[in-house]
Length: 388
Image 1 (tube, rainbow, N blue to C red):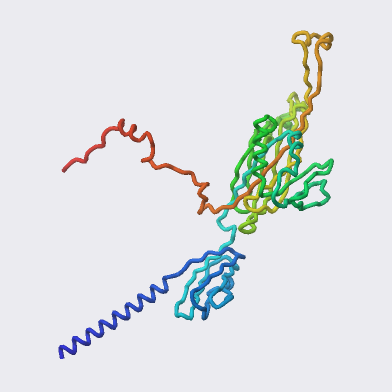
Image 2 (image 1 turned 180 degrees about the horizontal axis):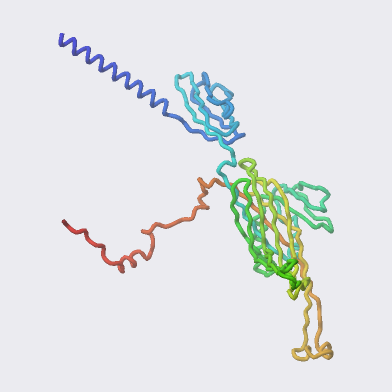
């Protein structure tokens, strides 16, 4: 009897052990979930080693699965969210996928790199617009191109006489243009006004200003009492290089960019005097546009001209300053200079939680500092713990 009782206990223990192993095996099978991240509007193909028998999807409104062959299917992302897809194979194996569908604009931010450069027009005439591209088509907009929007690589781009605006949308020769600007800077024929980089969240505005503020006195009517004096208040007017932009991420490769670059300076030649104050005018060049730009593609805006005329007087020092007779020992000529403002805009999209390697600032640990040993020699020795 005792032996039979022992056998029953052994059989029961073995059965419980087998049940526990089955439960653990099933739990291990359930926990082996393969994560899959797909953006909305995108598809992801999956190939299996055996034929597919059936497919189960939790939320078909988030992601749909289409079987295109015996061993291949495609996951189509429809709406942001999370869903599960279980694929049963004829070999008895099942694959469990946890599909995460997110919008391209989710958590992503827009970084806009802009270069304001002023170049003498004679330098631009030397290269011509057609020298900016060589290997692909470009999109061109101008007030003098009769609505032309696309130019093949074999055709030159020549603005019609009297054209006042020209913009080139390109992604292949921006480096060549920037190199040309740097070369002209070394020759003194160009100068970089500003080169900001602005980062903003999706559909959020960003502004940049490099310049100053001019105080402008404004008379307020109805001074205190019956003296008739007006109160003077001061308002500040900003000037310099300004940029306003708002970006919207359309998809993972296209950005809608509303941009307004502006360059303003003080013009004392057209200043006015009010209540003894000399208030200068403002010389402003501004463009406002909304375009669709691909990631890492550059928008080049040009056509904002500036013309300065200077009076240069040369002659014999001392004698040229004599009233009336000084004109016999001097000569006067007018020097005219023309410049053009170029704005190069390059947007890029990135995830702040997954920064690119070139965007991460390398920081050395304390052990890598070269002066660590010299500093440690000057530090007092560490206090030893007292024994009880």
